[in-house]
Image 1: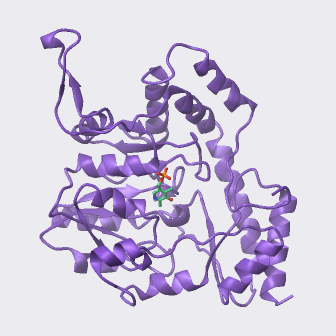
Image 2 (image 1 turned 180 degrees about the horizontal axis):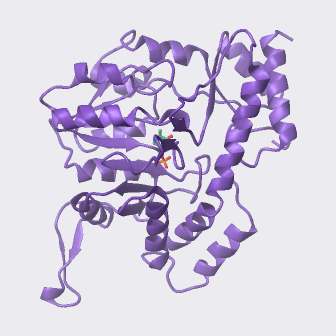
Length: 372
Ligand SMILES: *Cc1c(COP(=O)(O)O)cnc(C)c1O
């Protein structure tokens, strides 16, 4: 492992450890003040009123769907090019998934195709900011408004990304983030939902905490279970880590963008490789550096032999046995996502990457593409 370069890795320094240690030595290791402090910090950073921190990005997505009262008989529109949780979190609410193919340029949902998939049952559009490049959020918002739908943005890749001068998190009805170690900041496991809607906010807080509402009118001890909720809480020491990581987010994004520029320059004009592109009205926080190559398996294996552990994001949703079982085989129905997957490769990209490592990756990719 020592000389291996993974596709993603957390950055944890002494400051982070100190902040976590302080909380561990204190009275509140969960349900304490750090949770709200972390929520306020991220909400302020994104320019949003409300935030609910929770145990994972998957829990964040489910809380967001529950805020929409998503249930059996409802449909959710999303992209096949995402992690399973975008869909499964909605399916746990009883909803069905309708897929819309990707746009080959941004690798995000093809906004021009969304309306064709809207039915009377559609309740939510769940765009995914793939690799950290924001979707066409204004267009999606317009479609949602026209058809009376709610936008739940899966921004697991996109904390810190900017769309038309606005931070991701401040645009859609609900935005879900993940703080898994490979994501833009980490709390170990963790997630958060942002919204400007007070009703959504209240619902999510209740669902996060067993569907429980305190009713002090019945006595200071008295509470009622209003719905079948969950324990999707996050601990205070995780939130202390999150707060400490937020201090470094700007630096993390700068480093990610520098590495992306380096790769872009190194691969410019190279045959047999398609690079990720950034729209002029976007500033992506670049969680991934997704390229497309011919003979992906050969390239993947050759890089692996050199200790470069590239990854593939993602096996399209409709290729998985579970989705085939639920929705029948849809092979061939989303040709752009399928074509992308054929050649997809995410190169190592994380702020702690050393310059020599970035160079090593670039050289190895060039050699491999030249068949050396
Ligand atoms: C990571 C990720 C999730 C899930 O987040 P977890 O924190 O791992 O539960 C959901 N959607 C996308 C697109 C992701 O990348």
